[in-house]
Amino acid sequence: MLFRVEIREKLLDIILENVRTNFPREEILLLRGKIRKGVIEITDIVIPPLATSGLGFSVFPASMLPMDYSLLGSVHSHPSGNLTPSIEDLNHFFGRIMMIVVYPFKRENAAVFNKAGKKIEMRLIE
Ligand SMILES: [Zn+2]
Image 1 (tube, helix red, strand yellow):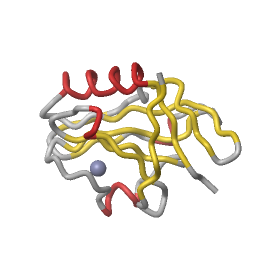
Image 2 (cartoon, helix red, strand yellow):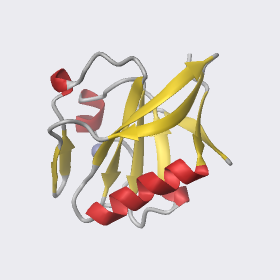
Image 3 (cartoon, rainbow, N blue to C red):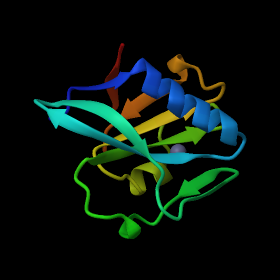
Image 4 (tube, rainbow, N blue to C red):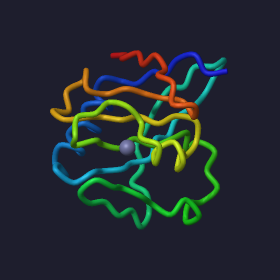
């Protein structure tokens, strides 16, 4: 059961900055963190090996990843501004959580979803 995701404001800002730099290309990053009593704390971002991104897509070969149970999910951008997971996103769900950030990439333009595509509470911590 997953109740909530926590992320430091500073780390979210780094993600947003990274994605903004790549705009209008989509960007995908992996999220590293720890889970405790249904609460995931995102602690780091990891650049996926062999990631490719472009206009309207961003993928990486999940089979290339080392066994790393601290990788809890991914974050990618929707330059279109649509803050909902696409069917494609749900079909390629990696890990436990999927963060989506949309243009114009402010803190309020980020949301986290579970495998079912349901939004999970995201709490910013200092
Ligand atoms: Zn997407």
